[in-house]
Amino acid sequence: MKCFKFGNGIELYFYPMDNIRSATIAFNVGVGSVYESEEILGISHFIEHLSFRGTKNYEMRELKLKVESVGGLLNAWTDKENTVYYAKVPSFHVFESFKVLKDIIFNPLLRKEDLELERQVIYQEYLSHIEEPVSNVFDLMYENAIIGPHSKPVIGKEETIKKISIDDIKKFHEEFYSPYNVKVIIVGYVEEEDLEKIKTELNLYGGLKTLKHKSKVKTGVLKGKVLKNSQQIHLLYVKPGFSLQDDERYSAMVLNTLLSSGMSSYLFDEIREKRGLVYDIYTMNMFHRDWGLFSLYAATSTDKVDDFHSQLMEILEHFELTDELFDYGMKRLIGKLELSTESTATITNMIIDYLSNDVKPIMPLELIERIKGIDKSDIIDVYEKLMNEKWSLFYVSPENDEWIPRNWD
Image (cartoon, rainbow, N blue to C red; front, side, top):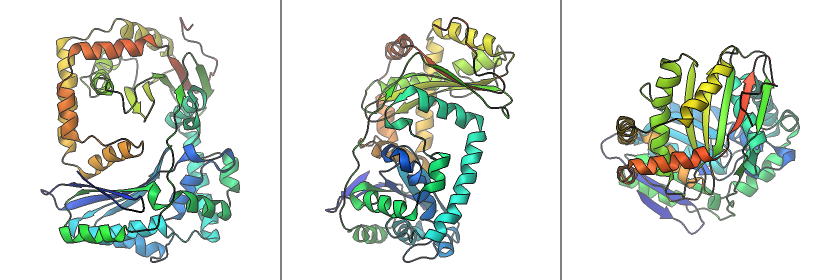
């Protein structure tokens, strides 16, 4: 991967893939709910929406048509630490699509009339979000288990969605959408001439850069919520995990894979296939710059929840890493990383995960070599370290928010 750093602070990361004829272009802006005050929660998400309603050089329909008329994809998302605007296009259209994204980032019109239209859209998105069980259980976890700014909701709150003003929007955009706070990622095949034109376009004015924040995971918390439209109990178990700068994260990736990736994984086989206790179950690592979180999600019926919890705890307590399971975790993870090298979007997202945390990206082939150096004892050490921490548990239920699992201390 090539990295170009400009005097104004903006950075360009280019990962060439010469065997394809497409590219993914992404602008990663270092701003999300972590950097918002309580009075304007959700403002980063507002700006993401508003930026597509017209810019200095493109009317709303024109900027979308520029990308979509050649078969491309144009979209964006907002997260805790960053807002990402991206396009996937044929290689012959890379420079034109880059110019569209650049204008969306630096030259949105941010009009009051557009704000009122998008306010209605975002409010409907908010209502959809609070009706969705999985979103609810993760929100419950962030609100009650995270000490620090990562507890803030990306979509905001009803009261902030209704009162964020156009002056708030313009002030926030001016502060955070500066070149020094933007990283550009391009993955795929790009003509040398287009790459040089892109580099010329990135000579912009300066600005400030956000400082990355750290949060902490609480243990021993039990919190439920009634959601009457839910037909199942959705459970989320969490513990402190590993950071993006922790070498044990590689072993944690293998562990996560063998526990719940694929129908052949340990928990899927033990909990769903052999016992029929859940519809869905998976584990997940959330890696951040200086902290991390390990979680286990499951969805089950109200009549099975006690049995599920008891058997899950027993299975985890008596987990044994066999040679077969270790081999499955290693081969599956390495295979998935090999497959990722064929996808411009997947590699772009991998790079974004690192850059959003101000950590140097590790690309799939290097990651594979590090994983190949892991042995069974490394996995066992990581598993024991995780299990020595106490769980926090959050659940969304159709009928009861006072459920206490058996043997909950």
